[in-house]
Length: 96
Length: 128
Image (cartoon, rainbow over all chains, first blue to last red; front, side, top):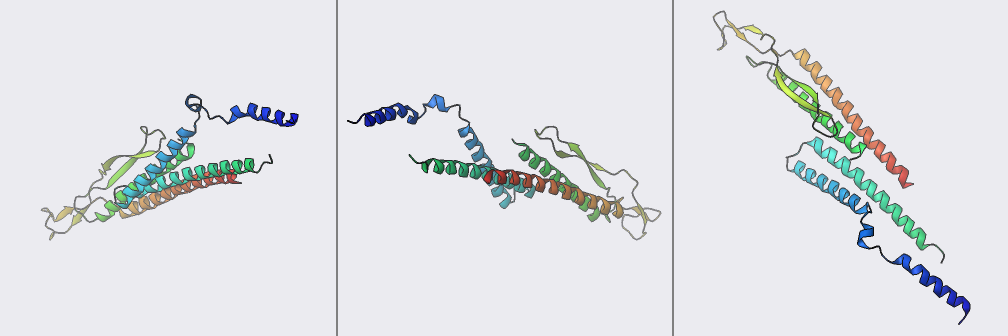
């Protein structure tokens, strides 16, 4: 076996721990699930008020406010997602 | 909650308050010819319960100004002197009040729009 091949396989083995998924306790500090929950809550609230406005229960001001807030949240989420996807594609394009 | 969301809800409370004020003005105008009707007015208060502040409506008050005495002996409510009590609504005041409510409503609407434009501009910055 070539010495270079051996070297490469050793390096691969050393790099392997980086691909191991985080355990639950390590992933707990991540704020992402909280943000996602917040986002879903905003969406749900907007939908609820929109439904109430269509059945005549909520006033139009509440509807406009809820829709503007939902728009803000969706826009932020979509922008962040686009950035994440862009970064991922950037990594995929990286020459190995 | 972010400042943008708070600004949205404060502007909305202003819109709601001025819509209610306009409603009271239209009630007054509708009852201009109602005998014994007293003009309704409503005071605004700073909302202390909400976490964002904003405005809320206070109690509705009746104008204690003297009712207008109208001379009409044929009216069913006329007294011995042939007078009856009309309403104390002054149309000029009501029109001015309505116009003020409209302007304040527009101001709140403008703030709402401004907040929206600011948040959109912020997101545009991230999109580039």
